[in-house]
Image (tube, rainbow, N blue to C red; front, side):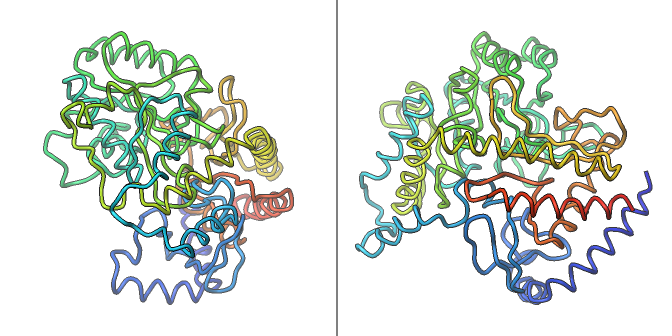
Length: 461
């Protein structure tokens, strides 16, 4: 492949981008004088500078330059009803106008009401809320290590479980695959406490448990892996994970921060017919507000409470179970539960159309492209998609090890060139596209297809 040609194309796109978004460029320059890299989340800080948003509604955001941008990132996949749905903003406005909603530091009934919905829809016995997916996965691993008396944490290479010690190993692809710790400043033994296996590879999983089974506290994985390519686990792989963890006395943690309530009004684990020991949730369950949760077996969750001697200090924080967050989450989950058939059937239909059409558009221009996010026997409908650019014919993107290997996929084309080129068409993507919301329409998808057609022409040239 001609790396120089890609660099030349990126430089041209960056020049066009700077000319098209001057107000965002100026604001980013000001932001850099105060904030690290000019922002608060690395994923949002697109080079050469991010778009700065001033309003958002439905499927669209509007930036400082007045562009109306079709958005498939949708609040880190949290906004399944679209940006600022009146259903939720109306409930929050009413709450605040009635003199309640900011933090009191006391107890109300909203956390119980949201917790009841979470337990009912995921088959869990107990739940405790926190404020971020990173904290939820960290607490889940702490619970597993305490409950089993073991230290080893097994995860999937390319799986992202947040900025917490055990989550910061085996995320980025390197010369040895997914192995290294991703950050300095971690406890010195963290990398040695994390074992990394390959997603959807049952043989490898059996080998790891055969060698380390009596040391493994938990196996944490996403049933639909997110940053690794939005690929669902094969049913036989997930069932093997459940079998091996039970056989060896380890806990199975399903990280459903992304997948929870994305594919049905509940956990994806239920679609596979699997009840994990613990489930971590976030994003959609907050209705656009900061909410995350750990839910699972009573005997495991109990060790965070007085009944279990508070052996794990999953005590919460100042903003855990914030009243406004609990209300937004309650309204969101109640709506999804009540309208499950309508919401997920429509999203699945649009998602299937979108993936097939995008692949066809690139094929028509002679550009090798492949979508992930397709459903399988367990996950029978999907609203997510990522466009990958295989380095050669015959490459099947079925795991993060393929999606992240520059010898197999043109990673920089997906992550830098495609994203910038789509923004020049007023379409916002992340990691190769993103997810649909209820707010997206057929007209919006036609706009996406037109944009991809023009981007494909650029790549072809």
